[in-house]
Amino acid sequence: MTEGRRRGASLEVLRAEAHDELQTVILARARGGEDPWEFMSELPTVDELVVWMLRAESIRDDDGRLPSAARDYRLLRQIALDHPALTTTVWRMLDRLSA
Image (cartoon, rainbow, N blue to C red):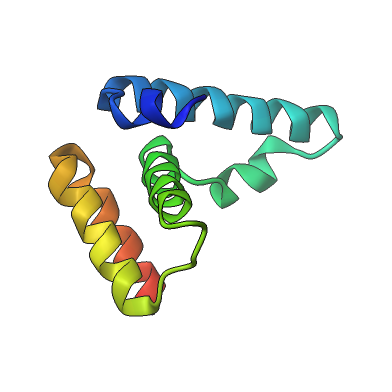
């Protein structure tokens, strides 16, 4: 996917892409002999994956530089501001990261 397409993509499109990615991971792990009951709780939710995808896009746009903890916090908060439907997910993720 090109950078421009994702940036202009709606949340519904991003969620559909994330759902497809998760389904691919589930299928690959199940075909590899893993029991879905054992690994499903390890996988991110669709919205968590969308947040990680948006974060990765921001890092890529910053020449691949990994953000400091403070910048990462601001970056994730900005994702919540840009996509209000992801706010609860972002705050849950921030809470887990700070623990």
